[in-house]
Image 1: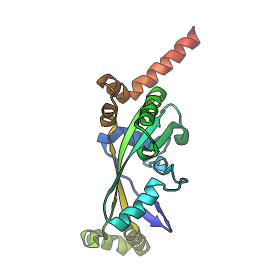
Image 2 (image 1 turned 30 degrees about the horizontal axis):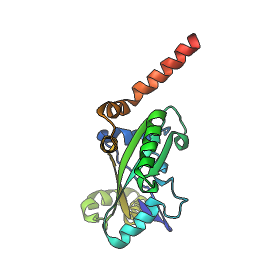
Image 3 (image 1 turned 180 degrees about the vertical axis):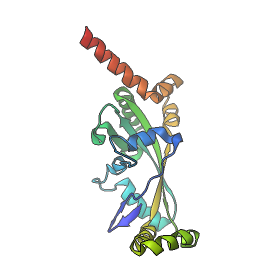
Image 4 (image 1 turned 90 degrees about the vertical axis):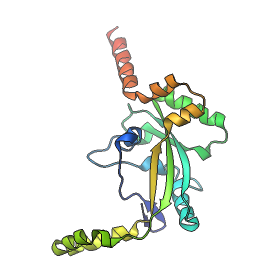
Amino acid sequence: MSKEGVRYSPQACITGKQDQRITRLAEQDVDGRKVNLEFMFRDRKLDTPFMQSGLKQIKIEKMPLRQELFVSFDPKVRDPRRAILPRFSHRFETDEQRKRFIDEAINRGQFVAIHVMLVTTGKPDLDMIQTEFNYVSMYAIHKAKELEEKLWSLAACSHLIDVTDEVLLRYGYDNDVVLENHDIDAKIKAVKSGIQALLQA
């Protein structure tokens, strides 16, 4: 993420095969090789939005900051703002509220829990990419300058780790619920076949 004025904005994202649930959230109704991370910033209108205030905090304290994000996901809804309903765990007052959110998320579609870690980035090591940088400069000096500006503007990284199964077990759900929460595609097919059965009746 880079700083633009007083706010931080995502600049690039790397997704891994092991975090398919997070990738699916980020790619909900998105074309091409892009991702939509708006759900991470959904609390931006509150007094202390986690991503923005957290990034300021780690810049001062020089220590990573961690939080859990609970997500209710309905993949049948195309619009990400309606399909993805996020809430940071510290916004709940009690574990009972957290468990109620999980129950409603599972009934709605899928529950996803994300461990969010914010860390600062160091100064860019341009020596490591000097050969590539020189090559770009030969053909498009303006692109090289743009790349250097982007590298220097990077201020922090956010690591997103899928901890859904661990959170479900922590709140007392059994293995059947954990496994059922994995297979969201089967749940969608069951809903579709149920609707088709009603239409054919």
